[in-house]
Length: 140
Image 1 (cartoon, rainbow, N blue to C red):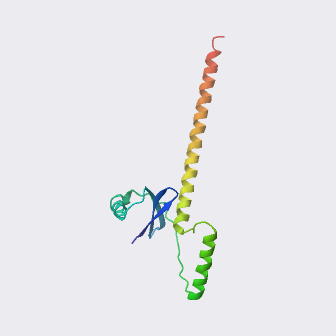
Image 2 (image 1 turned 30 degrees about the horizontal axis):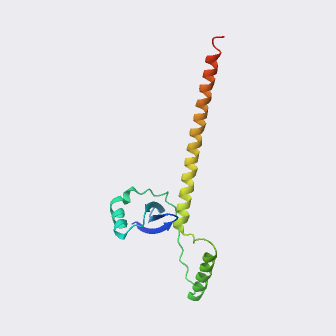
Image 3 (image 1 turned 180 degrees about the horizontal axis):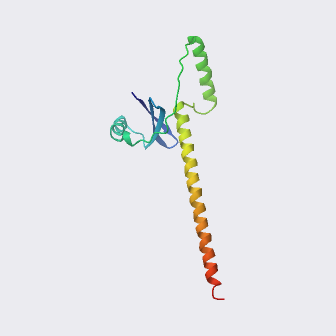
């Protein structure tokens, strides 16, 4: 059995949908950029018709431990956390952390590919220069 949760939020200039999936494999997240603010009908249409196109990241093992605590203590801790959030930036959730990790991983992969392509291009240019140099001195 899999549980899927969709969260739509505004990030910089676009509306983004974060789709969280929890199943026997673990916890995975996928992102979809809607652009303009989507209506409920548009979100439902996307989930029904295009959900299979989402590219979820690698599933991660999660273990959630529910620990009972005194309600007043919980309320105090929530108040402290909210004050910290007000002073700092946005709160970080498990989904945002997972998305950030996926984005960083994709950046590193892309950077590795582009640096390899750049190196191959430079080697090819060097070999072309060497070939031209040899052709110039051939007749003398």
